[in-house]
Image 1 (cartoon, rainbow, N blue to C red):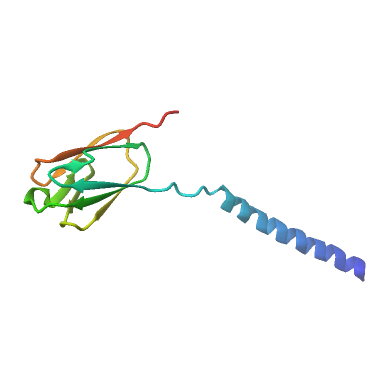
Image 2: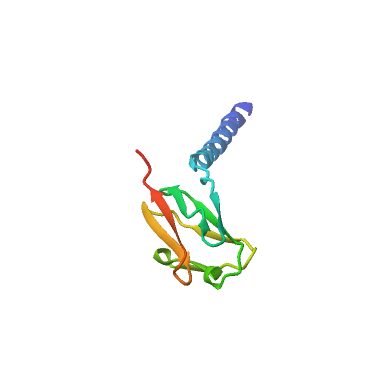
Length: 125
């Protein structure tokens, strides 16, 4: 009888190992998500920094902090990205940006007087 049990045990053991390995291989092949780069933009008579450079496909979070009371800077507008956000004074406002194609994306105040640029540069091969 022990010779009959041994092949059955081996078959179960092999099946269990084969069933586990593909799942482990799939989990190992999934790359971790790239880190999000947060950039603080101070709004006080203008945008500081007024020019922001990021890499193509980079995950970016812009944190706008308005330090003034001027009605001009009450909102920030990224027209090309269809983004418009209110900027309450002294309250951070976070904008999560999608991965962007290379180019320049202008942002400005709601009155179109204060401007900044988000430059997306192509990754080098």
